[in-house]
Each structure stands twice: as C-alpha cells, then as structure tokens.
Image (cartoon, rainbow, N blue to C red):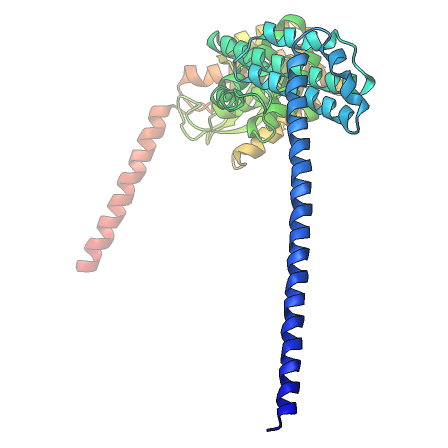
Length: 417
C-alpha cells in the first residue's frame, strides 16, 4: 500500500476523533449549563418556599393577637402577598374549627378566636373569607349542641325532639356517625311518638295543620318508610293523616268468624262509618250468617290506635249526643286483600268530608234499635229468628242421619240376598 494513502486515512481518522471529542465537549457544556439553570431554579424555589413558610408562620402568629392583620399588611405590597394572607386566614379559621370539632377547644375559646379576627381591620376579600367561615362556625356549634340535646331528649323518651336535634348534626361533625346510629335506633319510637303527639294535638287544640306538618317532617326524615308513606297518602286523600291509623286499626281488628253465639261461619257484608271527630270514627258492621237475620256489631276506633267494641245501647248514646253525624256505608267483601280493604275504608273516610254524607243521627239510632231488637229476639228464643227451636233442628238433623244409615243398610243387605 502506498504511504500517501496510509497517511490520508490516518488524517481522516484523526479528524473523526477530533470531531467526536469536540461534540463530547459541547454536550458536557450543555449539561453543565442545564444543571446550573436547574440549580438556580431550585435555589429560587427553595428561597420562595422558605419565604412563604416563614411568612405563613409569621401571619399565623399575628392572627392570634389584636391588630395582627395590620402587622402583616406589608406583605400585600409584594406580588402574591394578598393571596398568601387570604390563604393563611382561611387556614387559621379552618384549623380553629377542626380543633373545636375534635374537642381540643370549647365553644368559648372558639368564639374568642373568631372574635379576635372579627375586630380587626379586614379588607373586603378578607371579610368575605371570614363571613363564610363564621357561617360554618354556627353550623358546627348547632351540630354539637344538637347531638348533646338529642341524647338528652332520647334519654327522656322525647323522641320527636331527639330526632329534630339529631338531624342538626352535620356530616363534617365527628359525632355524625354516632348521630346516624341513634336515629336508626329510635326510628320506631319516633314514629309512635309522632302518632301519639299528633293525636293529642288534634284532640286538645284541633290543630290539623300542625299534625300535617308533623307527618310531613317525619316523611322527609324517612322518605322510604312504608308506614309514613301510608300516613302521607291518607293525608292526600282525606286531608287528615291520622285517619290512616283509624282505618288500619279497624281492618286489623275486624274478624269474619265467631261473631254470633249460635253460628261460627259469619262474614261481614256491610260496614257503616260515622265520623264523630277528626280523631274518632265509630263503625256499625253487619255480619251475614247461614240463618237470618244478620247480626250487628259496633266499634269505636281512635286515631291513636285505641279500639273498643260497643254495645248497641252505647253506640246509640254516642249518636244521640251529636245532632248530625257524617256517615257512609261500604259493601264489604271479605275476599279482598288487606291493603284493598284499607284503601276502601280510607276512600270512604274521604267521602265523610262531603256535606252530602251528613245525615240526621236519629235515623241511624232507630235502625240500630231495630237491628238490636231482632238479635235479642233470636237470642231469647234460642233460635235463628225463624221460630224454629234449636233442639228441634238438632233432632231433625239426627233423624236425617239415621234415615240415611237405614237406607244404606237396606241397599247392602239387598245386594247379598
């Protein structure tokens, strides 16, 4: 190989090596420059963080003393200073509420911390922040008091007041889960208390508006409770939610058998409702048996669930005490489902509000008297009301059985002859 060619190749190789080293040097310079820039940025950020942290500590310390806001107002002259002060005020108020929520400070100390800041020269922005947290403070105080009062009312069996107080406990309150548990525990007692309180209010003061509000509030507390929804439905149909309890009690108590001392297969065929008041309805029920006449029974049902079977005389006396009694009659079908019977009674109760249902009670009294006389005659005669003695009926039935046996024996003997 020619020496010149070797030399030429060597020169080219050296050029490539030099170019590579030059590129490497440039890369190193760029990396150092980037490191310097990043270091500078981190240093600036570190200084800013230290400044913000230090300024925040300074602001937090000043917020605990009178005229503290004035002492940090100089920070508002630098870029972002106003926002830094606002954020620290929010943090101060939020942490104060957190201390109260976790029982680290009492209500008096909470008010004191808020009062210190409220008395200072707040800017419009700072005042808005303070106002929003002041509203939260009132909610926290009401929440704490609600939980305490709720337990006190529950211990005293005042379940309506207890429920009202437990409902004031907010989700942010550390007692929220406890309050929710207490609400679940007293739900049934609360509903019973609502019914009893509504009954007493309607009886004593005839305040139907209060009663409706009471059930509306209960339905809002337990919107999926079927019992409360039934009361609400009765209110929509009749205007009085307690009429549901009257209808329910009547349907639960009414029996279709053993309503006559001589016959056990008795079925209700007719029910007449007499509205005595918003809290009391009396019923006249006619039961059909296999022997006429029908037998009649009388009931008095109260809106608190009390139920009383009345004699015909007592029933008449109740009607005599009232000049005009709204009344309506239902053709009763024992084959109906329980809910269908309940809906039927409630619908008829709504009809009692119609003035056309108002009849003179004297006619009802006479009808009751006639029905009672017919029943007494049957009982005294010991028969079904047709003049046929019960003993004769038994003897006739026995004779029929013996005659049937004699016929069977004659048939059997004729087969084997």
